[in-house]
Length: 84
Image (cartoon, rainbow, N blue to C red; front, top):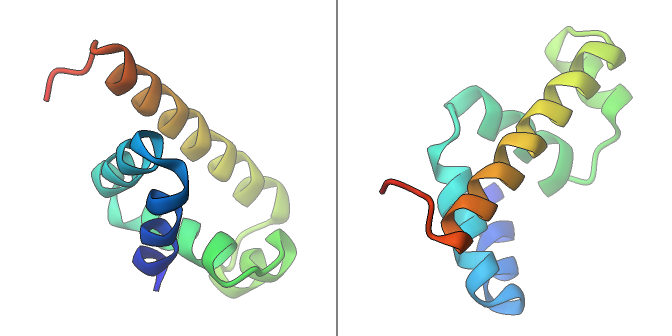
């Protein structure tokens, strides 16, 4: 489900889309699942928090950390400071 969304973004974002997709692939399965629930389905944080049995605050913080990790990964890959 989320892969289709990332593939669509790849085409419209060029190299950044490719890099973002590769960074998403490096995330733990749990993080990828949360991204899919929140972004691919267009759900609200409240709805996803209820679905996974977490508080909105906890889920929001987790999503913030995931986004930070993705930004860091993309920046490192685009600047050539990535080891793989």
